[in-house]
Amino acid sequence: MVLISVVSRNRKQSQMQESNPGFQVAIEGATKFTGGEKGIAINAILLDPTPLTRDNLSVAINGGHITKEQACAGALPGVDGCN
Image (cartoon, rainbow, N blue to C red; front, side, top):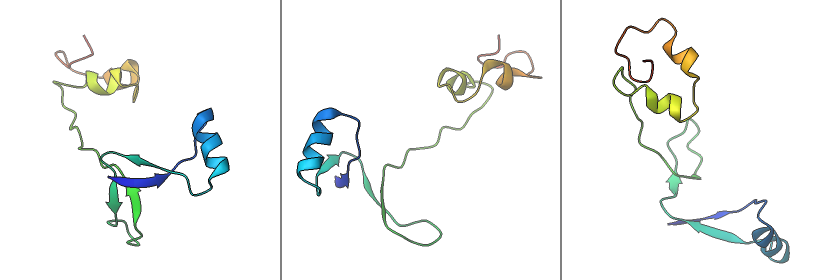
């Protein structure tokens, strides 16, 4: 677990932060990431990628990443989410 600084619209956290400028919160799963181009350490939660195929295209549509119209433009019959 890594402690990260919080900028929040949550009133309670904002009040705690105002009274304690070093206020931090633990985020489970966060780690230090240094794999960027410049190797600068940042706090991050790295997610596993989800490969999109014709069998699970609805994952992107239902997640709001792309509209059904955009995803299904020119799709062949049988593409998940386009029927």
